[in-house]
Image (cartoon, rainbow, N blue to C red; front, side, top):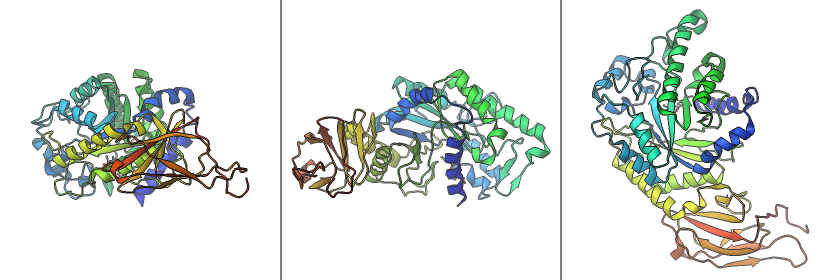
Length: 442
Ligand code: JFZ
């Protein structure tokens, strides 16, 4: 229940406070355009939790393991097979346009060479490597946008109030100087990430533990925008973010947020956990991806590399299958906008930006005739995007004297089907015009 409330809070905080800090809507629209067009990102939870294959940070917070035993994992984090070029190749092959890597999770262990303390993959682990710099360099070589996940929570830092689930070190009101010391620390890390890596996107996390005032969220936003006014910020910087981040739970009704991204695990856990073999199938991932895009959102699909930097083969397989599907059908996904109401077509749809092309998505082995309702356009052609098959259609029930359009039945032979989701391209005579009446005589 807590998670649902908090995730709902993320959304509320994001949009109700935006008016307060008067973010210029035009500037925001321009800089969010790449994100709106990108549709797919790959999330990477890398951290010492992959050594024992246990829950990231939460395992000690929820007392499943003592904090000292959790922190002993620093000694097993080797990255001996870490290959940032391979990671970037895999992101590229998936079809993703951006990738977000954990620079620091709630456990406080930085995956980059932070100068703010000695708790990092560089200074505290046998890896002695900064993961972020080389990965961002490889992403940029491939024109893939870079995202920095940063946890505001730092349950290991002695100056952070929170620690274990039912105990805290102090209350801010009782020791403001200590809280200020922590604020200088975490804001110093944000400054150095800004300066060293200049991420295209910031993925904050953990804002739920304190208020925007306590975090100094407006100041934090300014720190990032001062370095790069075009960087975009997720909605977990309470009231000072640019887009919403529903987590794991897929929206059923189309979200009202202008920009949003569903972040989702590829099995049931964010980090590498060997016992978790509940992999989502390529079909499940692709259908969830299509659903998010048809509702105007993005999918941020997570992978959890092992402590040596290698990526589990199941994750590689899923990303490659997703990428192969994107290669066949990406025209209906990338650079499109949200589709039409489900009353017109009983499935996901997207539109070209000039709305002269309607893309219909057909799950699994469904074949025609498919029904398209209320289309008040002349159809110039219907083809399958992935297989390029020209399809026939029939208009039924058009009454000559009525303005109400007829029903369109589209033949979809089994031979034209995609292995996972078939995409139909409906080329229209002009920008889409839809009849949304209740039938009858008008
Ligand atoms: C957060 C992190 O805690 C999690 O470890 C992972 O990094 C995910 C992407 O982001 O997920 C949450 C967010 C909120 C709650 C729990 C986990 N909550 O409100 O209990």
